[in-house]
Length: 281
Image (tube, rainbow, N blue to C red):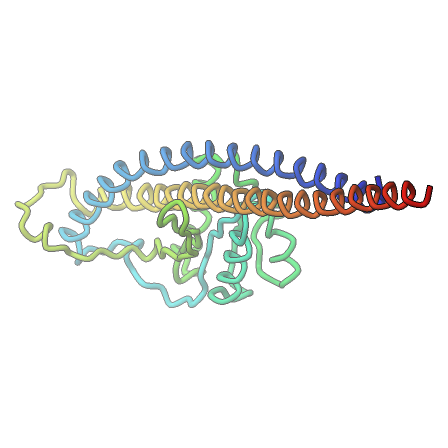
């Protein structure tokens, strides 16, 4: 066997080994995608009901002096940004980084959830508020609540004009896009459905309820965006690994064809040499 054939066999084995790895990672990402999507959808019903109650209370107390609904004079924005902990998820993190660079000012306070972009953002001069990266994979609601409380504290002290979350919106299993949701100041828009509802009575009062409800709603909204980002991450990783598996399959087939041609040429040459030798005798 010639050296070229041996090299082709080695490459074919290497590509097939890589294909097994990417295929396994695709299956793992697919399982995580279904799990994260189920968590995301389970949270939606709770969040929708909370937003509905808050919207009704805001309509009732729209003239009340509620600090969470006031616009501040500060032009700074306290931002929570979600990215992944690991790579191999296609363009997910690069899209997040590009979106942050386009929409954030470097001097504004920023909290990053996820480890993959921590060093990059720090080197780029963004004002990261944490001493070390906060892993996103095992982020608890209580840990995210602490971060949100920091943002709300800055907002109430007029050190931040708005509190916002930058996340990756999950459109479907193949489409994801970075987006921003401004959580404070809290605003509501009266829908046609709400206009037809009967009057709602609040005890002790709509204003007192909102003072407790708005922080809860802001914290849950941040957590909902975290769940949506992790779902988008797993969807992006599944697509990346599927593409890698398909590419490995195509490459292995091309290498196998090249190997077969080289082997056939080698056999033909040997037959020709045998025939030539027999004629010489």
